Every structure is written in C-alpha cells, then in structure tokens.
Length: 157
Image (tube, rainbow, N blue to C red; front, side, top):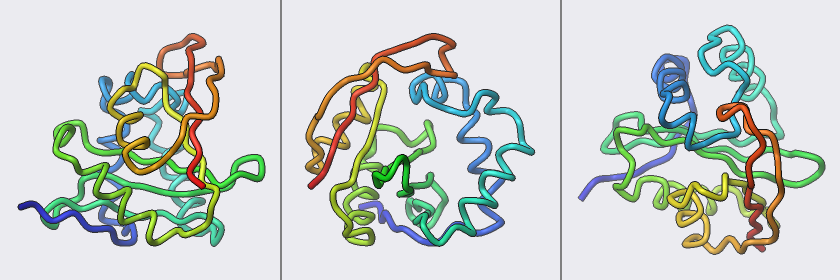
C-alpha cells in the first residue's frame, strides 16, 4: 500500500510544483488559477511569499516518498481557506483524500472553508468525504476558463 505523507515544501520541490500547476488539463479542472500559470516569475514570487508567511500553513504531499502535490491553509477575507493540488498523473489514487485527512490533523482551526469549481466532481468528492458541507454556490470568474463559472463553497466545522 502506498504511503502518503506531508512535509514542509523545500526549494527542490519548486520546479516540480510549477510543472504540476501549469499542466493544461489540471489548470482547466481547477479553473481558479493564476491569470498566467506559465509565468515562472509570478509563481516564484507567490511561493516565496507563501513559504515565509507565518499565517499560512503549506505542506508538500508525498506519495511513497515522491512529491505528489501540495496542500495549504490561508486567510482570505477573514476566513481560513484550504487549497490543494495533486499531480494529474496521480489522480484517482486517493492521494488528495489521504493528504487532506493528515492536513486536518495539522490544522485544527475550524471553521475551515474550501472552494471548487462545481463541475470538479473529484475535488468536491474529496472535500465532502472529509466532512466539508456545501454552503452555497457563487458565480465567479475562472481565469483558466476565461469565463464566469459556478463555484461551490464548502465549510468544515
């Protein structure tokens, strides 16, 4: 059985994380991504800011010791928000679900909020399986799709 673990993000992870987060199919599915996911300078600046902000919890997700993605919690408009990204080549293996279970033990603050494109059924399944409850839907601009789409807002108490 594969071992899923969390650890701090290190400099050696950045190239792989950048590649994961600019994968066209994954970007389209995530929908709410940076305006230009291929902009390495913006990615590096954001990661530098995230990694040094004591208010943000960022962890690398590993799968049998290999980098598989990232997961983090950050404040947005006063709410603690969750976000995660798993390498598309590893989708469907339960990695996001197991990583989220581990992360929720690391970040005990509640409520915790999450958002996903309403048509991203895989991500919605991961979140509801972990106990997140659907709160509402909103229409928001999705950079990756260059249009407004429905986004589901969830909350874990």
